[in-house]
Length: 219
Picture 1 (cartoon, one colour):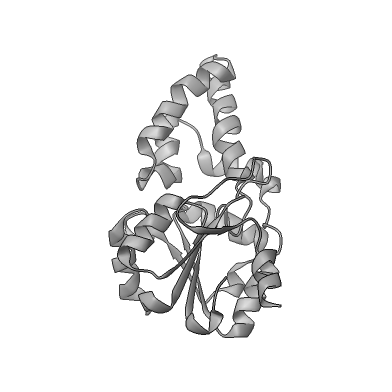
Picture 2 (cartoon, helix red, strand yellow; picture 1 turned 30 degrees about the horizontal axis):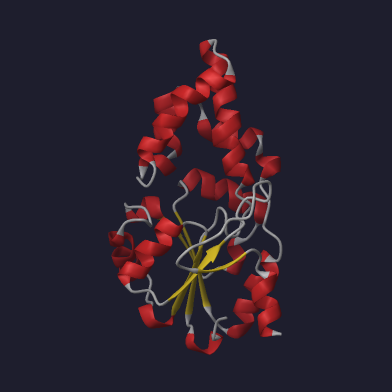
């Protein structure tokens, strides 16, 4: 599927790509509504009717990914709540083997995530994946999310990469579309980011369910 000899840099998303998206989906779809409901004397279904439209309005913006924004908006300590269910944070199957494979090939590895710095720190503390990367890039330090073309322009100011020899792996088609518009040549979607959800059909991009598919293809 991929000619690794033509690739210098590999950009990897975190949630849904390296890590099982179940943690985040459960947190926002179940855990936050339950806690919000308890605080306001609602049942969880009522809380979801209030919260989910708020979430949808902020999708694709920097605030959507901001722990501090949602703490202020909802009156909840979002960072502390994530600590409460930290046991659900899981590395996706074959991720470490894939990272080792890329290092052996001599690629430069960069984690590029929209996650807030507090979420990134928690997940790196638990998974210890940071040692596999040459650089960790958080969109909050860039100032715009990956869905925005300006993200890639600003990233190029701090990370020396060539569009024609860069691979981006991400579970978000909106992010992949942004990268494609910017000119990044090699794009790969994760079709099964949440192990507790159904596998997805991805239109418009090559996709895999598990990194084992890439390892097997190169064997």
